[in-house]
Length: 389
Image (cartoon, rainbow, N blue to C red):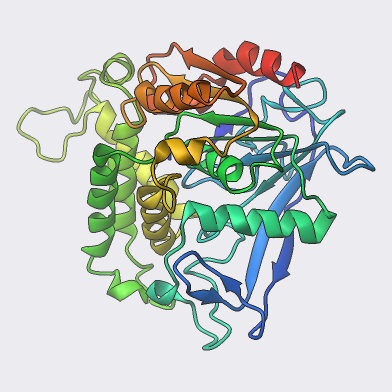
């Protein structure tokens, strides 16, 4: 979950991979569809992806980076020099950086069910020629991983990964990779995530979904050709709910407190007078509406809720026992969405199985969003781990 954007930091060697482009790969036919975990099928899947660095002759220098809930395949660089924003992990990817593109071939794909280049609810259903809407099948994090495995194999002939790393929903994908394909993942870095989602996270996701579903412009998900723009207010409210879970009380107090957005309108009895924190939430909601599809938000949050690496296994221990990759687990001390205890549980199980595992709890007051906002605090632990591979 979490935010998914970084602005340029002139002191951080930003955009060292330079200008990048989004690429696409499609697979599947009516006779050979992509079979989902729930046994439903997609006859065609188009996948957006970006790459950084060069694939070696042995095809064994691949780092797969996986993104958060409203993220995309744009992990590093810029599409144009005039862009103010850069890839969500630009500070980690590039020549000489933690994920050194002089040594590794870094790949990032947009997740299945999303709306930023990969097949999702807003995509055209080949059978009808119209957007899927709510006829799109439910997808899981495991389905996202299986899609990634297919693309890696088809496009580059890659069957083994040097490393899989991701934060939040991306961390869920990283864990699933190591459980599904234990002999094909050499190293693993799940960040600010969990082996399965807890009740509190599911509860907030349900509130966010209801905000979208109750928007009068939702129209049962069939809003793509309507002049009103669809459930924009519901999606904005959903993002506001999510934003509150990404930050801690102390950071919100430090950033906003009870400061009014404007001294001229901060009247105690004016219903429409906004505090600075209200303005921030409205801005966050409006920003998501411009770049994300409401139906995809429903599907992505549901995929997160369904995440449980022990599904299909006797228990969590049996699932974790399948992981053979050298592992660095990263949690955030103040993360209320995915508390450190959830990564500690996975760490304990890996240690009990005799695996090579390290655990790093990043001290930060930012909460869940720290894996993006304060990613520099992870750099020493990440660099030491990657250099040990």
